[in-house]
Image (cartoon, rainbow, N blue to C red):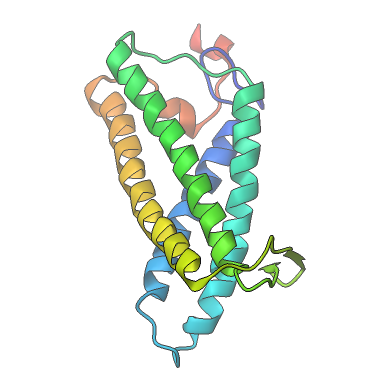
Length: 187
């Protein structure tokens, strides 16, 4: 099952979700590691190249996810509790918005001197202009604190999934782990 249905997520949504999750956690870990490096550490120069390239991958995946979410059917919430459903929806949309803010600020920081952002040295994403040091500092604050906000939202998202699975014992987590046809549920 590739597409989402009224009751389940399809393979496309599952792939986009988990690949984004791996990239978010990897980029956060690498970013945190890079802030501890000195100029003469080998990864001081290698780390940003990987961080920018995989950040661009995450940006493309996030745009695809948003387009997919807006054009595709969204499975219904499994609980009839309006508060928990609203909280889940709010956390998801805050994740999307914060991800975009962090990625755009990262791109602007990387291209702040007018140079393109390198995508694995295959091609460059052009700069939209140069920025003052104060602007770059502000973008750095947005990038740093936005990344931490993403982690807080991820913890809330994971906590909600575990609450559904272990306390409320519904299929919310399971349906994001493997695609199932609606027919298989009715057996």
